[in-house]
Image (cartoon, rainbow, N blue to C red; front, side, top):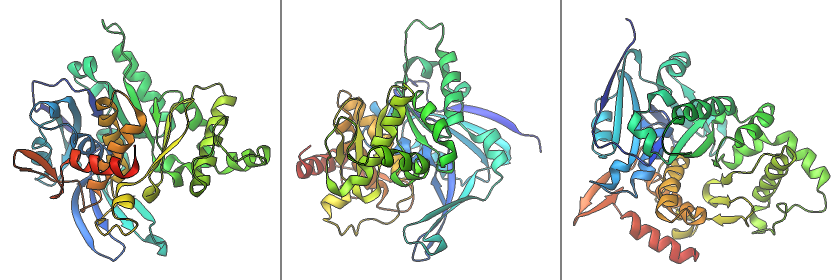
Length: 381
């Protein structure tokens, strides 16, 4: 069967400020206790856009979110209705003749507690050719309004993506440059890609690997950095934040020193570290650790955590919304991100919304603002 693409823009009021170019993938999730969950809507794009949607309620603010959903054959029938129910600016591209990307997410794989193994079930060639969200898929109106774009991709593809998007910006009345929020794709986080990673940092405004991926990227560079900096393990020009996060400080120091050596202006670094939270490092500013919501609220016994799939993506969606709503404060934005991730952790798959007394409640428990207020009071941020 020949491949055919049909596009449907769900709303003619599309003027999004925040967009994700992450993909929509159907997950089959195996938890550490062996529990299997099949046909779960996921993927970095879906989790990120819902992480942002948590902060932008319907009917008006939710339209400031843009998402392009590439839908293939055998996609579960509830996926598009669920996306439509978010009342976002949604472009659905039906890719007939290609299987909907599907993957295993297996926790505790290889007898490693906490370890997640990701494996495509559908052909990766099909995903790469037909299901990646590309700059030329963005509607014209979105190009004129979008201020934040989330991507999860390799260094080389990030550079190509940003350059292609910049071409679409040329010749427009406004001299605009959206904030690029980049997650290095897990498979690209290898020490052989270190130099490419550093180069790509020059094409992003925000760079956010998780701490394990950052360690894999910086394996060889860290060894060299430690030899050169035996006397000090603190970030260059900064004081240590907390001895419990020495390894995060060390990674930040190595990345910043390497960027400086190449004369690449540093982006804002968001070093995500699971239950420890996120180390936020704005350019030329003191790093701040924003803890994980459930680590603080549940005091180390986070019984609310069901599944961690997508929590990092959701964090970055929340960060973008928080950055927009907090007058571009990267620390405050990380608090929003931590709350978004907390909702994602409470069930298998994306958080579910419902209305209670005229307010949007997520995961059947809290409103986002109630949770944010509680969190910021506890951490004094």
